[in-house]
Length: 163
Ligand code: FES
Image (cartoon, rainbow, N blue to C red; front, side, top):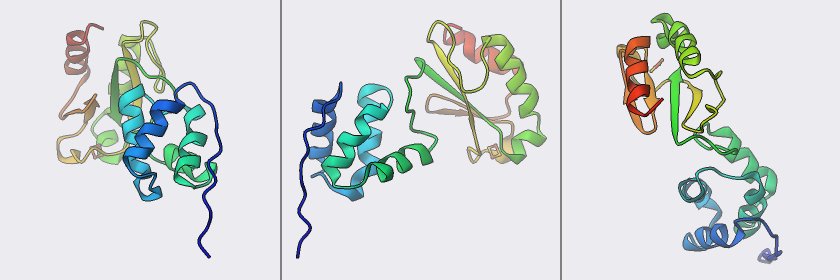
């Protein structure tokens, strides 16, 4: 017998937009990743308050929605800055000085990894391999990967963004 899908009317700050996104994918559970991407694109992040809405629309458990949203580092469950700077902490970059790069960027921005500058301009995050190991150390500013970085180049990039 087919499993019956019960729609429960959860309320959340963005439930209407989130339901529309789910509906655009036919409320298909195999479209969870695309839905999370679209929610992040629309809202700037994936608020935890919206995960029950998504779970309900796709007829999956909240734990499953939460598990996927937290497994992938690209999804932000909290608001982020206007720009997201990710610095690679994986092995090749570490061996080429990413630790020193991180320290200098943290000092320049006056934030620690995982935090956002007070003016909301930059969120600083760690990432683990951008596929640029041969040109380490690497970072990514929004969707733009940058290789062979050092603190001078990183500061110049950040200044271009207004930091
Ligand atoms: S280890 Fe940093 S890009 Fe691969």
